[in-house]
Length: 80
Image (cartoon, rainbow, N blue to C red; front, side, top):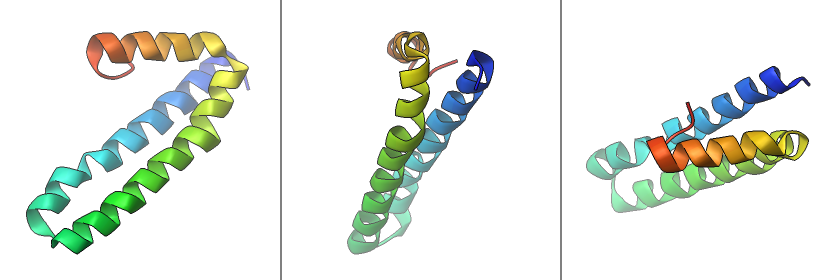
């Protein structure tokens, strides 16, 4: 995988995880406490797998992308 494709993969993985995490306030508002907790655990598990199976692999290939993502997240709250 070349660096540009790695960047696209990493951005998509990060955005997918963030998109799922954005469900939590909606779940809290419209679901029971048990449902919210169960879905919250499922979302956390899926986000962890995205990190482990995609982001860590991409960043192992291109450590400079990891540093760039970290900087952008600290500055803007997300990679751009």
